Amino acid sequence: MNQKERRAARGLQIVAVCCCFCLLAVGAGVTYRAMDREKAGGGETLQKEQPVTAVQSKTIEIAQAEQQGEAEKTKEIKEAKEAKATKAQPARKSEQPVFAAPLEGKTKVVLAYSTDHAIYDPTLEQYRTNASVSLSAKKGTEVKAAADGVVKEVKKDAQAGNLVRIAHGEDWLTTYGQLADAVAVKEGESVKQGQRIGTVAAPTKYGVALGEHLIFAMEKNGEPQNPMEKMKTAE
Image (cartoon, rainbow, N blue to C red; front, side):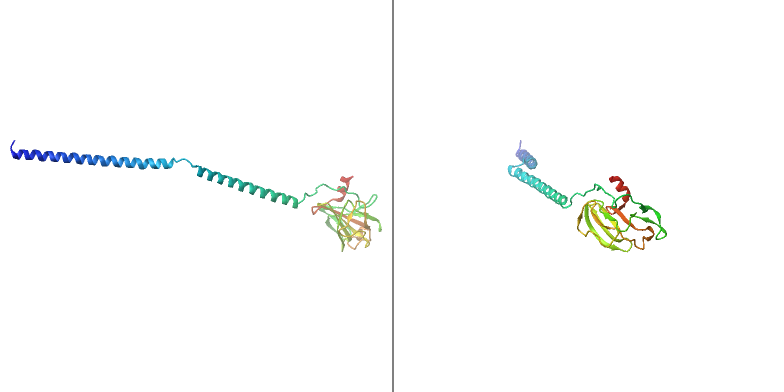
């Protein structure tokens, strides 16, 4: 081998060595990057799967306790409001009082109760409905309270003359009209069943054709009731 060939062989060796070093460098770089990515991915996994610490657990317990406390507090406030509302609104008495007749003995109905159809009124000479009952009674006849109650109103009315209204509990109200001026009770006074509240007077011009009589009416929660039926029920 001459000198020229030896130089060519040495050059090839140098090139081969350089190529080997390059391949090693490239392989090392790829391996490093792969390890770096794996490490980064592992860190994220660890972060995601990181267990709840004692401090975090305590914070959750405190939050749950606060929520439970707020719920109990809200419940207590609601119960207190309901109790106050119940106390402020006492139960209404819905039982019907035992009504007695406002006049003693048998009485004649001279103008009947009728709210569902018109009946003839001889004084007005026309047909009309009537939310009370007119009971024949001589002037001076005693008129008595139909049940225990409190006098709500005493006044003079153009059609019914002197009248008295008595409340019986929360629901019931009775009215007595065509009374003489000397009414025996006053507003706000408590009365007992059968107590004298006045006497029958001469009728007004709106009921003169009926003769001397007592106007007697009943209401329940503001709705007219037939007094004759309620007194029959009470017997």
